[in-house]
Amino acid sequence: MRSDRQQGPRGTGAVDADTGENQKPLSDEAHSAFTPPLGIPLPPPPEDEHPTSEFAVPEGLTADAPAEPEGSAFVPPAGVITPSNNQTTGGFPAITPPNGLPVIRLTKDAPWQDRMRTMLRMPISERPAPERIERQDDTGPAVPRVLDLTLRIAELLLAGGEGAEDVEAAMLGVAHAYGLDRCEPTVTFTLLSVSYQPSLVDDPVTASRTVRRRGTDYTRLSAVFRLVDDITSQEEFTLEEAYRRLAEIRRNRHPYPGWALTVAGGGLAGAASMLVGGDWPVFFAAALGAMLGDRLAWLASGRGLPEFYQFVAAAMPPAAIGVALSLANSGLQASAVITGGLFALIPGRALVAGVQDGLTGYYITAAARLLEVGYLIVGIVCGVLTVLYGGLQLDAKLNPEAALRHVERPYIQILAAMLLALTFCILLQQERHTVLFATLNGGVAWVVYGALADTASVPPVAATTVAAGVVGLFGQLLSRYRYASALPYVTAAIGPLLPGSATYFGLLALAQGNLDRGIPHLTQAAALALAIAIGVNLGSEAARLFLKTPGATAPADRRAAKRTRGF
Image (cartoon, rainbow, N blue to C red; front, side):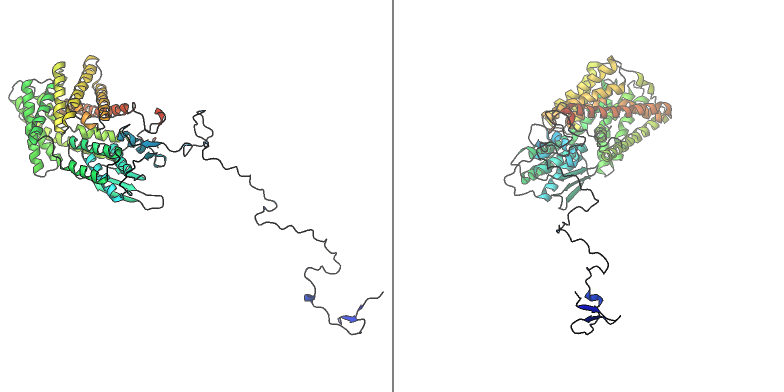
């Protein structure tokens, strides 16, 4: 058998066997790129094709572990304490409780201060959702008007001496009552601000207000508390009604006229002089000095002088009368007269509010309040020292050793303490139905202090702390029984505990140039003032322990006021 194609001469190509003609050589393009060259064995035939997916895992790589089945929304996540076994199921903390967020009911089951304080003491991400009252005539929250109403209410509370935490609680309660859930209030000594963010994708709305004037009117403060309570508890309390009530509160006049305040200041100084051992002539001398100082301070205020100079002017007449009695050798206790005048001037209300703000974590506001107290005390020191220095130049017989003479007159001192608290209530412009409770609370405070200091020989600082704690406890319980502020029941009652005598003898020693004796007296006065403030706050917190926290299942769930742990 022969082949049809013969190889021709080299380079001439192949020769056709039938025609004998030479053919042109085949080019490289004539060969298939997939055909092996001559002399190389053919590859094995391909198996059946198995196309692979682009999502398949390449060779040499390990596949991920199979995903766990999706859990149910009603199954408690790891780390949650279940009611059945009361044990955690893992090491990770729960973010959302298995039964949902607790609901705070905006009803009168608990005072609104405690309901809102519970939310304030939680991080924003953990705050429970309150059960908002459905208002039938509202199509939606009018954000600018609600924020404006919130700031105006907060301004009256802060200007009246209320603590920063209670002011923020009031702001949060008003905002939530009118539908602003994602709301964050902020309170400093002079600036109020509130921010509302409708959702995570919307821009926040922020409003602020500056508190420029402060006044002491606990009647107005109680009216504002009732307004906040009505807003947070009544279903048909509209914005228009709230604005109308707020305007009425602003227009209301003080319950006591100016002459009554002057007489009350004199009675306070006279009662304080009897607490430290004075008799009836000393009572009238101290009252006269306090009333002259009050009128002089009003004159300085009418001339536009700052409050510092008003305190300087008010401190001078009582000290001048004491020096005059000493120069006249009348036999009356000049130290009791000056001490009574100091009782009427010591800013106990601002001191208690400043320490309370510091204990609850509002350090900027606390520092500002305490700085204000420091300036006012420096004003008192300047006025008293000026008169005492002049009296010493005239050879006045002012003996600091009189501080060591202690007179025990229980019945007279209890009546004097109650009279001091009564006159303090008038100076604070309290409502008449709160005067009796505050007066009795002041008497109880002095009884507790006298029993500890005189009978049990407890140090004065410890006895003052316990007595102030009783005042704070009773004041908080009374305020929650009436859904009102605790200040009217507390501020006047701590009047008998104020460190008037220690302050006077410290200033007298400084005027005499005796620093070794003056500094310990002033240090004792500062310690007594801090003991009063801490005792009042401790009593207030003890009162809240008897109340159920909204949204909490156990007493351990109560949130503390402190926001950090020291780091």
